[in-house]
Image (cartoon, rainbow, N blue to C red; front, side):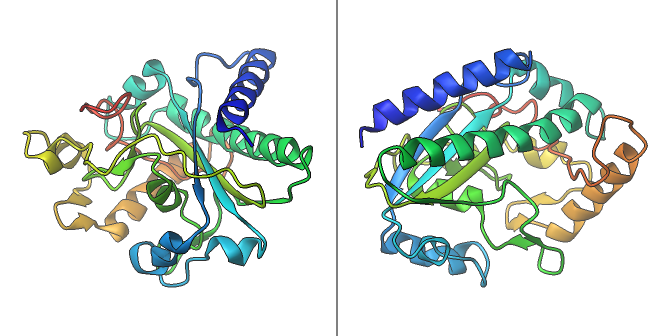
Length: 257
């Protein structure tokens, strides 16, 4: 399987899908990275959550992991940078992106099936444990291992197209090989010794710290936003969003390095 062929097919599907629904102003073209489903992923229960699944838990015959990033446009990102609560446009974009993630995942599955390979999808969201506030399948950590990006102080993945966007992933029997988009070096300004920490200063509840994310504070603000959006007619009543720490940052729309 040629990775460039897969990337081209995904991009073309994305373009047609967004043009048909007239949503080109929400997203930029997606990025795709793949990795061999080897023992690098065995570290997931240590770095993500203790009950995190491994690729072979989803598909025993899997050979590869594919992960993609759908970056928001500058308009969506910058619009959420203002005020202390998530913007309506950001909330609606998030809800629409969940559907796009599912569509792209199903497209990749069907594309690979055309070559005789079985794949197993993972949920875009809702695999979250409300007690530990961790996910059993973390797209961010999968993407980190696959080389799609590097973590910032805000605990978000900084990709070549920034961190303002959403991730999706799947496992497959196809031997896609290792096709990372970033190297081992950090992409967060603070982590490379440069002055920044804007995500810490911007967080309205001070959940972003040098020691990591205070999950309880973060979740509390997310639930406040959820209640605010509950009365909106076009908004799902279970939307969970804030993202002040990824909007209007030097790493929002591109790698600052």
